Amino acid sequence: MEALVCNTLKFQLNFHTPFHYVDRFLRASYASSESSTTSTVPPVCAIGGHGGITNSSGMNNANHVLTKKLVFYLLDLAVLEYKLVSKKPSLVAASAVYLARVTLGICESPAAPRSLFVSDKSLRNALKGHWSKTLEYYTGYDLWDLEETVRLLHRLQETAEENSSTLGNSFNKHKGNKCHNVALKTAVSEAELGFF
Image (cartoon, rainbow, N blue to C red):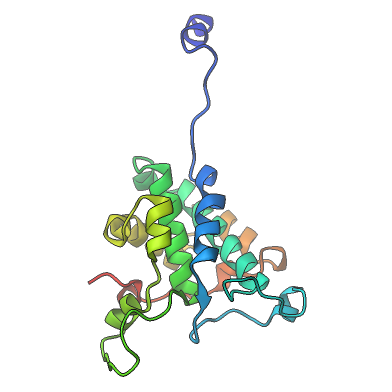
């Protein structure tokens, strides 16, 4: 019976996961980013960078490494969440990139004039532009398409340490020096996600 199924499918049994999309989405993220002043990224020398060398977008290599490690941590958590199984893999990958950018404070240039004072923190984050037109183009998702999935990933990020029975292995793996302690990054508050 198994041979019949395999022959019918012509042995094309592969499927896409969020990991298939990460490199493309991260390249789009690097191309559209600049480090914000609220970034919690440690100095380059603390991560073993190359003396603060930056790329053409102004984002240094340490930020690239940290962003990638954080995205992979979020995707490791996502694999263990049943509610995310029904989501498109590209949507989960794009949501992980967005949440990593928010967590690390990586933004597009402000969309509003500097003279405009905005007191609401979530509105300020939305104006800072954690999701850019470049990311929207390359992922195929606008910010509002990501909302539900980002909220699910955010909940996983917040509770990973407490849910050691289900998420503990991912948390323990990514809190080590090899993964630049990304699991120990403080999750942003719900209001800072940029959704109204």
